[in-house]
Image (cartoon, one colour):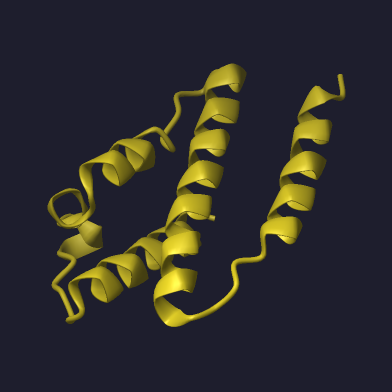
Length: 99
């Protein structure tokens, strides 16, 4: 999932700036190229090994995907799949609730 999330963030940056950009080695320039609120959300996708923190990191990744995915879809004239996203999130949260 991390690779797809990073790829989407790169697309967002290129579309927002309307030009190719140097992302640096291993996307090391992400912090200076991404909006501050999105970068903070991106940082929240890196948890420690505690289960509640992993779940919070997943939720942050889902919010980031939703936010940036909508921006990319709007910029490129696509419809964001909100219904599919909601079904997927409900399924994953139901899995997390099973104990």
